[in-house]
Length: 317
Image (cartoon, rainbow, N blue to C red; front, side, top):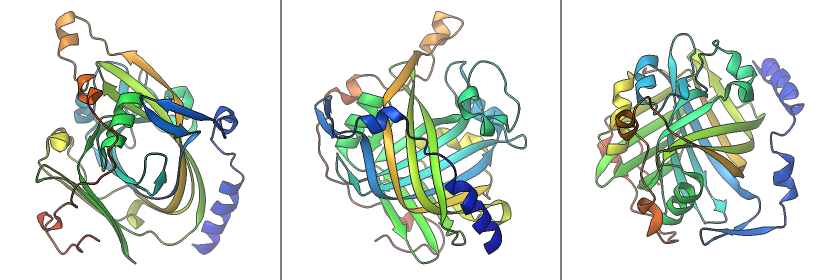
């Protein structure tokens, strides 16, 4: 295994950075978007990340995607629920946790062959449709939703690292949203350079934004990947219970110290339907009034209540 990891690490080091040249050219410049000051590019440092992907029912996933321009990514006849929790320790808007619950998708009206989107990400619009995105602070909601169209909302969040596990929980108004815990993969120190596209519904439109991560991390695939996911009854996760989420993940990842850049370029399209009545019924996300009155507070809510989780779970810290 050590030889295999060493070979993989050597190959990964040869991969170019996914960061667009424009983002490097922005270094040293400043911006103020919706009243929030940014030192360009919009980056983060020293940000631990946990990830886990679980097989789901593909038809149920398709039923949750608004409009007709996204299709669930298929792997072995199943869709994927991707759980990503980032503990942002250093950003222009302060410290906060971001807890993403998303369905892996391809963007386009036509079906695509299995696996090919992994090789040709841009061609097939491979990304994830973000169903729920709780964060720690008001300013993160204001920026993420108001500028990039992300379905952010403030919630009670934590991020707990032990010698053997990494876990995160989110509660909303005294109700469990989600708990995820991964067993830390075997230490491999793989140099990872990742680009990811997020698709989100806001104001009746589909918004696409891109984020780029560089990190040294550890991965576990197949039987080696071990994780636990508990979905609660908070409104943001209710729809995910229809997905028939598998108990075992297909992969987990632990990035102890990631460095990311959120592209300031984004795209948006109207969500459409065959009739006006069907268009009115689309799940197009919240409207502009959901962010119009937000301020720039960086205060966190109280940590979530870990006693809500069945089993022997280490208390938050």
